[in-house]
Length: 232
Ligand code: CA
Image (cartoon, rainbow, N blue to C red):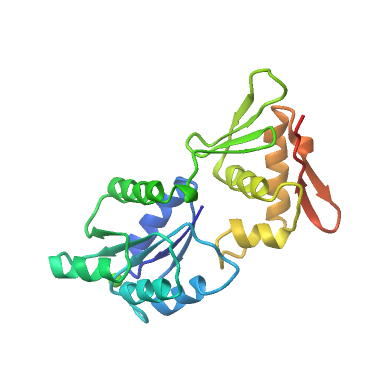
């Protein structure tokens, strides 16, 4: 799940990004409203939800809300702001925000608000994803392999392993190339090492080998990787 965070206070932005990353979200953090719009108004990045500070250089959080809603976007929007009069809240919600968090706030409350937003959009946050004999659990961060009628074999995943499997399970039996994985699963502008995808796939296969599933991720030489779905 990918979140766009737009917050121009460096300390707060960094703190939010850190806590969300710990919760296995992929977070793109920008500090300017116009740059934020570049991240939103393209076909390459798909966000699960967005967090906008109200007062920002370039475009305000309210203007970003209005632009998204004018485009017909239904993405959940959380507004962060020090403004806490009733008139401000009405203005924020009328602009298309789904929720509103007044600064200063605790990170526990922020996470709870995000969970609530996801619950209201259940298509964004299923509890589990089952494809063939594979099950990814979004609550427990586990991956299970159910072979015939025996009890499923389950492993716990790190954030990146979880994100990779989530992506593969949404693209079963398809060739997924390195650039797709970099674009979807690594933060924009983080300029990861050129072999980071291959290294993560290696780690993922090692993890999957614990339950005898490593051969389901196939390397398609020169093209990328493919998750083979086992229906037996
Ligand atoms: Ca601000």
